[in-house]
Length: 88
Image 1: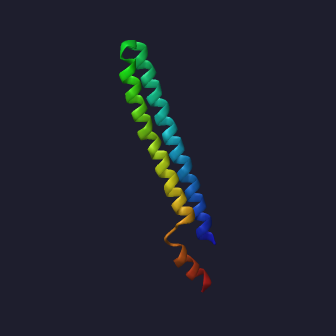
Image 2 (image 1 turned 90 degrees about the vertical axis):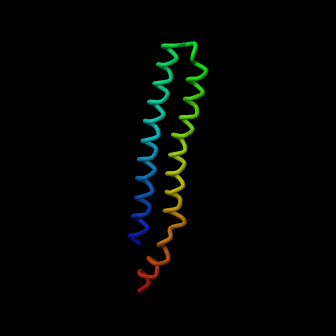
Image 3 (image 1 turned 90 degrees about the horizontal axis):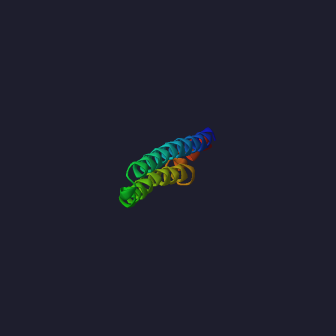
């Protein structure tokens, strides 16, 4: 049973770190875009378009972390081996 508890801990830590990293990245991207628009308002269209594409790429990291956490929790490939070892 300890294996499954560690799986839950690993998934939780992974989601926390992934969310923290993407939050920092998105905050820095928006900060830089706002500073760029403040310096050159005429380029706001290009800056905002590039920022939105960058935010989508950063957000994909959070989605990948979520998918890996769900795999760890629900589709773990080692579950059968651990259950066999625990049955002994």
